[in-house]
Image (tube, rainbow, N blue to C red; front, side, top):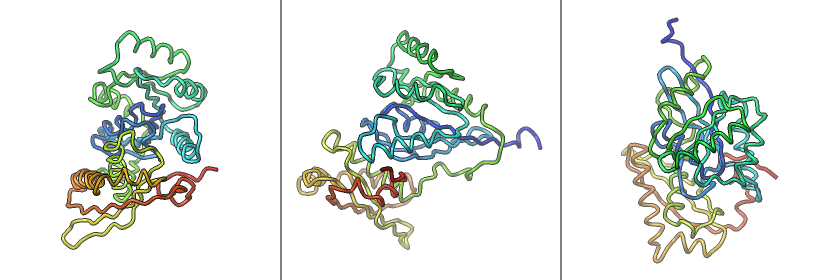
Length: 301
C-alpha cells in the first residue's frame, strides 16, 4: 500500500464556553453548514457530528454544547453531552472568544481541562476583530495553565487561519479506515437537521423575545411522488404568551419563520420542500424524557 492509499481518521472534540463560535468553526471545517448558529448562547443542545475531509484524512468533528454552570435538567443534559463528546477524542480543541471571554465559564473549564489526557489545542477565535496585544496575552495566560500542543488564531466567521489549522489537525489524526462515506457531512438525519434549521430561524427572527424553553419536534416526513418532501413540525413553547410571539399578528411571524426555513431546507436537500409548522404550549416539556431523546440528549436527573 502506498502512502497515498493510507487513510487516516480521527475524532476532534470542539469545546468552549457558550457562544464562542463552535458551530461556526465546525461549519467552516466541513465546508458547508451542518450545525446551526445564533448570536444567542447555548444554541447547540446535543452532540452534533460534522465530517470534514482533508486529502486522505477524515475528521469527525464533535460540535458540543457550550459548557456552563447548569441550573435546569436541560442545562445538565447539555453539559453532560459536551463532556461526553470530549472523551477519547484524538484532539480536544478549546475555542475561546477573546473579546467576550466569559471568564466565569472559561476559568472553570480551563481547570477541568488541565489534567485531561487528550491532545489539547487552543484556538483563539475572532482574530478579525480582536486586538493583537490582548490576544497574545490571553494565549500566554491560558498556555501557562494548560499544556497545549498547538495554538491557532482564527476567525470562524471569515475562515481566516482555518485552512492552516485544518492541515495541522489532519496531520495528527491516526491511520485507519474512514468511519463515514466520502459524501456524508453529518451524522444527523434529514429529519433532525430540518428541525434544527427551523429552530435557528426561531432564534434569528425572535432574538430576545423567545427564551430557551422552546423546541422543535418532528411530526411527519413524507416523500412525495414528484421527488419533493413534505415536512410537518411542532414548535413547543412553555407559555401561551410565547405562543403568541411565535405566531405573530395574524400568523405573520410563523409564516416568515416557515418561509425562511423552507428556503434553506430546499437548498440543503437539493429539492422542493413543503414545510408545515404549528405551535403548541406545554409548560412541562423540559421534563419530558421523549423530548430529550429527540434532541439526542441523555435523560439527566
